[in-house]
Length: 342
Ligand code: TYM
Image 1 (tube, rainbow, N blue to C red):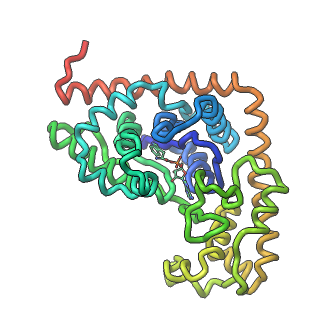
Image 2 (cartoon, protein in one colour):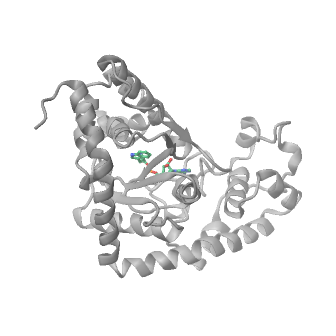
Image 3 (cartoon, protein in one colour):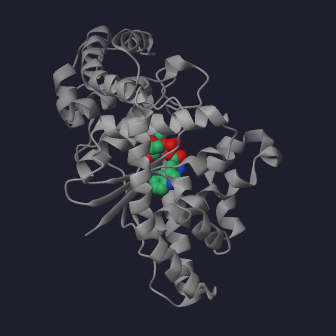
């Protein structure tokens, strides 16, 4: 069976982009795939994390997985640091990946910004650890938002070079699964910027624990424009939204995409429904939909946050199952490289 692997960093402020771009799609994949979902705490510490908050955020992301419908009896849920094969394989892959490849990673450039010299070595090598996450399970499919596409391409390059260098067919080439109408959810304040955990403005994102009043306030204040909403005529012959059209009204198309994703409808249907409508009317329909979808999940997350022992028990059982898969694959990699094992 195909094996799915994906992860989320426990860096706080889990938002609608994380939900629609990733977690929600993971739930559906459970039906016909063998799924492994990871809270990537080792990735989180590539930037400074307050230690007490890191533990709380690890439990919060786990609670979000559970509240969204990931079922620990069908899928493996664990935190990355508890399966040592990730770090061990990452070291081997550090020796396979080339500096030139990492130098091209746009996410490092964005995150390090002007202070490149002060960025941690971990932030630079981050994509190699991500490759290790995926390859340690020989995962075939990786459901992510659009921003992770380049990291997935690098993972394939690393897998290929490992196989070529050592003359083995050890690692499969994992495929990105970039699913749905909200693969790149944009900020509510600026339709040209990605919705992000690190945006200083809390008004730029809807988080998975926002209550109804907060969701309403954020959507009411979300940047919009003065035109009426477009209809299906903006789509091309294949039913896609051309990039220039999206860029001409980034905020409008962002909110329409969010609506379509939450309603689980094609964008064409949503455009038909709201063609010619005022923004205010659309925003109130979107508020109702967002509250109905996120409300029950937020409450479940709050309930789970009051019960950390049960969350920890799920992570700990998950780590045991994950290690049972990853350890023999790590051993195969060690053998291929020529590391003596006892
Ligand atoms: P992270 O924690 O930044 O984000 C988790 C998931 O959410 C998606 N996402 C978005 N999707 C749509 N719109 C947005 N605005 C948005 N923001 C975030 C991300 O694409 C991601 O799928 N490197 C990864 C974590 C990771 C991983 C892995 C993923 C580590 N190892 C192995 C897959 C496989 C990251 O930082 O995601």
